[in-house]
Image (cartoon, rainbow, N blue to C red; front, side):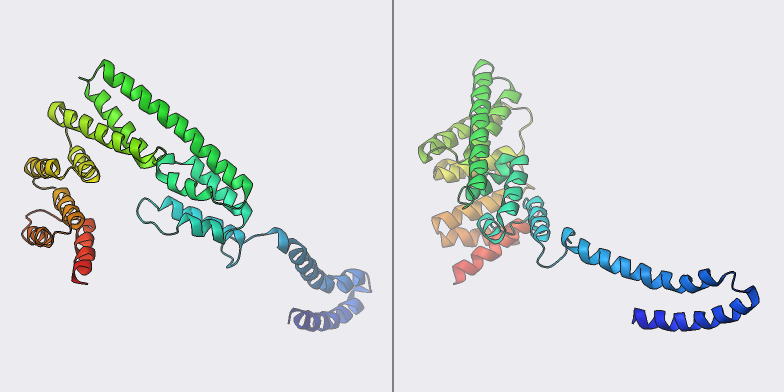
Length: 294
């Protein structure tokens, strides 16, 4: 189409050239002869340049572009705090080796606690470099975690009366438990240890929060100390009457115990609640209600 337009333009300009040539006595003839060729020549040069340069350009929005896979997955990694979109095993399987490496490198740059499970999945990669880098990152984090926990225990042993030492130890213990880099027996010991420190903080601390109660109740469920769970859950509800965490914890308890009567009690509590119930709690009630009905 472009060349047809150019041919038409050349014909028109040729007519003009012949008319002007007679008036200018051929002085400007060379200019008029070559001027119509400038446009088509420029178009040809641009077309050739685009053809040769196409392979070097990767559009991140191209459907099959390798960069898009990396872009989309890394975007999902950033959103993973709010929603789990793509399992790491699938992401590693779907992407080529070069992108797998980029994914693992990006994970290693972030908070190891958040992505430790993803790094563990990367250990299964067929690419030795990916697996090696994931293993090195995990080993490095394990050393740092052990040192941090040891340091926090040491600070606490010297000054257990300081709230900052108790809370620092609670965080270090919680991180170590969630990392799951120690045997199950050690996990159980750490869970009981954090319960011990949480009890102390709740009894002695000046700035006890809902999070302290939520953590101690959660860990009591994990170690199956149901008697003390009920005691602490009751105290949680009394101390923070507008929190919906006690309702969610009671729901978890009913589910673990497979107690239909307790589950119905949670439903009634939710109906009569005088505080705002979060979407998370409502979703859990709906999900487990469907499970009970089926």
